[in-house]
Image 1: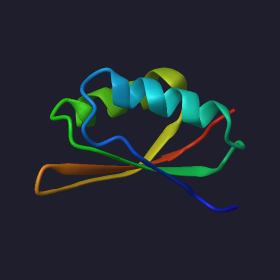
Image 2: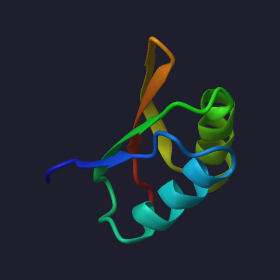
Image 3: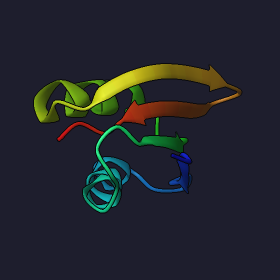
Image 4: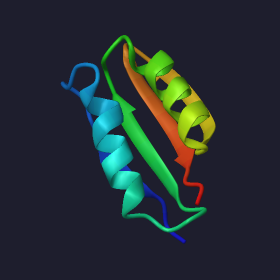
Length: 75
């Protein structure tokens, strides 16, 4: 199962999370989504999104203001 990559740079809160939610709906359970965003609120937003939606935040990193999230889709 190949991971899907989504680039949400340039979007401000809450758009990265809203677009991620829509993208994850079309993915298979257990599939990975790699999401990049540059909104400073993104780390908090994606952590909260995963906690409330049941998806797993597998990995999170930041380099020069660009955040990368690896999210595993739940049911």
